[in-house]
Image 1: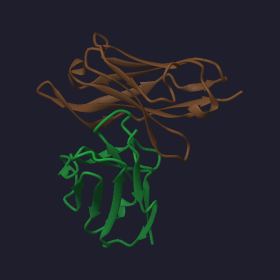
Image 2: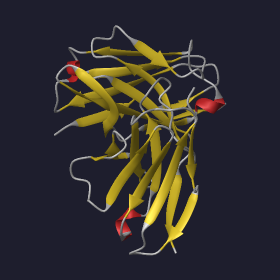
Image 3: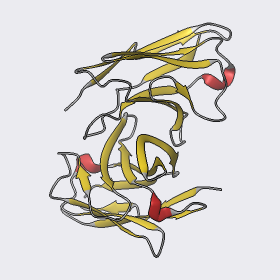
Image 4: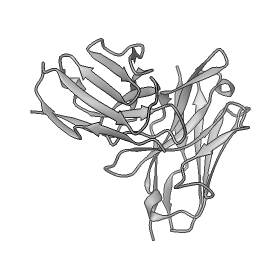
Length: 107
Length: 123
């Protein structure tokens, strides 16, 4: 199984900050990676697919990059509505594993 | 508007069974692969199972293999998860999710999710 490790697991930041979350895969997965945002009590929401393609309707302050084993999700200027937990997911093989999540909280 | 609505969750004793349903609307259900994902209280997302568009191919997480069965009824636009031999560690919110497909190909990402249904396994 492919393991995904996100870092950090917890992040405290202020509105307007630039935030970067890293997701490392235990083996190469090309660009087969998605990022999701989840707010408490809600279903996850797709942000990024194919490692760097922004899902329709997602603000352009979100961006993704990487390929192979290392990927990043960047929020260029953190907004109040961005405080949430973020998950990466590999789409290369089954089981379709998720990272453990990164919780972004208000500083 | 795409909608996925789960139902069937509840309290069940260890060793018991439960069948979850996911009613789909707003898209051509028979053209999409579907998944179940679960989330234990306060924990992260865990992929559970996937079924292809006509039900001929299925995958399962090792933790549920042999106990859970994914199925679908394309005439009823409904996805199912039959859960047998339930354990305390199966306690979670269960989400159904649609995998993005276009032109006969599916691309992996989950573009729509239901609101989830809570399964609690406890005596």
